[in-house]
Structures are given as structure tokens and as C-alpha cells.
Image 1: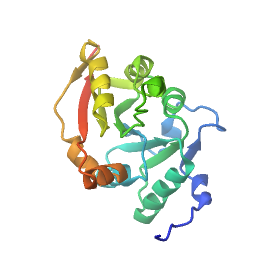
Image 2 (image 1 turned 90 degrees about the vertical axis):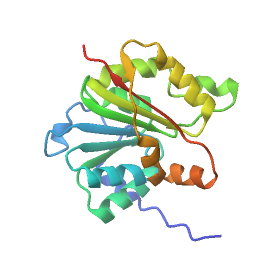
Image 3 (image 1 turned 180 degrees about the vertical axis):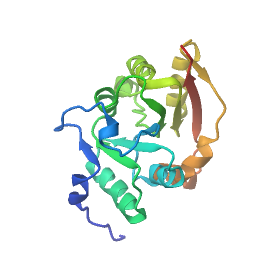
Amino acid sequence: MGYIKEYDFSLLENDVIQAESEPATHNWQTIFPDTLPIIVEIGCGNGHFLVEKAQNQPENNYIGIDIKAKRIIRCREKQTKKQVQNIKWICGEAFHGLQSYFKDQSIRQIYMTFPDPWPKKKHHKKRLFQKDFVDLVFQKLESEGTFVFISDFFEYYQVAYELIQNDERFSFYENNEKEQMSTSVFGQKWLLDNRDIHCFAFKKNSQ
């Protein structure tokens, strides 16, 4: 059995909002030192994808949301090692985090990366990507803001796609995000397992 690195919980003390205990905030300009566009990743895993994005694209500010504190610690390890400043984290449930910590029409782009598919039919109601979540995404995205959905579970991908397909508030667009996701912990895992990765992207139509 390989060595498992211990978790340094002190890393949660900086750059991390604890959604269960901290009051909601709607002003990221008091947290970031500038007013750059906001990019959000829901389900940031161990931070491979988002830390690399933030490092390579300093013209944006990045926020990762994940419910598991230990994953956020792994994200923070990568962030501190690479000394990336334009990234913060929310440790908590994704719907609550998106609803409570962002102003309406304040997010430029949202990534939903390898969400829990809850494969058993009796558990489908626990899936995040449902009608109320789509309404929340519409509420929080800027005009022409974008959303990228990536999953290795085709049935969930198909259901999510169909939910957006006839929604006149959004339009699909071509993207290459699936290839970029090979940097993520889940992307690497599923590619090694020869699983197909499914992706669609849509933008909020101008109002």
C-alpha cells in the first residue's frame, strides 16, 4: 500500500470559506484585490484543473467549490506550492455555495466537473443538475456567461443535456474543455480506465 500524505488542516484557515459556519458574502472584491471576471468550478477534486487554470490565466479570478474538506486541503497544497494568488475556495455543498456566496449576474463561467452521478434510479433526485439548479445558474451567470458540464457517466450527461436542450434562456456552443479536463484527478483516472468523457457547454443568452 502506497504512502498517503497526511492532511494539514491549517490550510483551511486561509483563502477558504467554510460554508457551514461563515455568513454569506456577495462581494468578492473584498476578498480578491481586483475586479477581474469570476470563474467557478463545482466539484474541484484535488485542484489539478483549477490551480492550473488560475496559474495560466491571471486575467481571471477563480473559485473552487467542494463539499469535502480533505479535497480542499489538497487543492490548497497545490495552490501554495505554485504560489497562485487569484484563487479562493468554498468548502460546502455546491447549491448552497452558489446561491449564498455570489451576486446575481456576477459569474463569467461555471465548470461542473465529474459530478456525483447517483447512478441508482431511486437516488436520481439527489443529483445536483436539475431544474432548480439550472434556474440558479441562469440567475448567477453574467449575460453571455458560460457553463461547462463534464461527466464520465453518459446517462447523467444525457439527462442534463436534454434539460437544457429546449431552454430558450441558453444556447449550446462548441468547446474543447473535455481535452483540458485530462489534467484533473478524475479526468486522469477515467482516461486510464478507458472511460469515455462526455461534455457540453452552453451560454446564457443576452437579455
